[in-house]
Image 1 (spheres, rainbow, N blue to C red):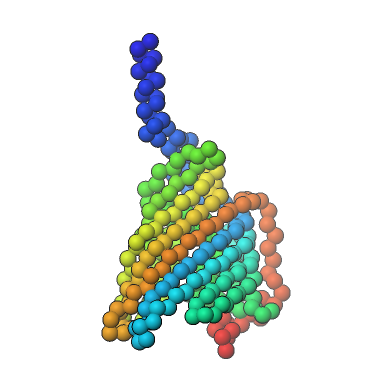
Image 2: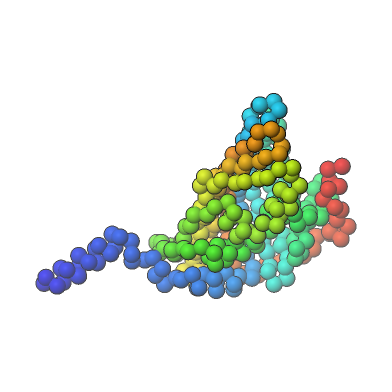
Length: 267
């Protein structure tokens, strides 16, 4: 009886400490294999951003808020992707709304604005937003670069990992884009990560179904004014994946062959 009671007590201690369930039946390798097997999927992405900084000349605080939703589907085998992007921005008393259909063919990204298609350059952040398939690569890069603990939930599995700004940038393959964008500035840019984390929910076979990212950073820019300018920014992003490896029908839209350069849209 004492031996039985001892075993029960050990079991209770293990349960209380959370040791049972973590990594149970699902390993990092299994998740990586599941990610590699994803060929098609639909996605629903919601994101929001807040930013504020002090304008150096007028000493006025500028506040910017942005929110958006991207609904689309992709086929990695053909390199095709299509969907619709909606964004709302509020700054300096103005409200700006965009509602843009998009089409992706390999590395080429197109947006339809006022009935006309435009070719978006790869160094534009909108190009990344329009490619929901990159979320699969995002998870894969995180798993390869970070140590994670996969925990068993009542429905599937999940892992959550802290990330810095640059870990996030590297995992989302935006390093070259930022280096090019910031390389044109007169001074330097440094980033301090106040808080940053990513949480991924997985099915029992390791297929991702939900990705949530949060970043709270301070960017410090020099060369713009006598004193450095600090930009405070928070980003919150949620992506739901569905219909993984189910058939999707994606065709090139009419008029895409006559797409104009994206810069022409502003003239």
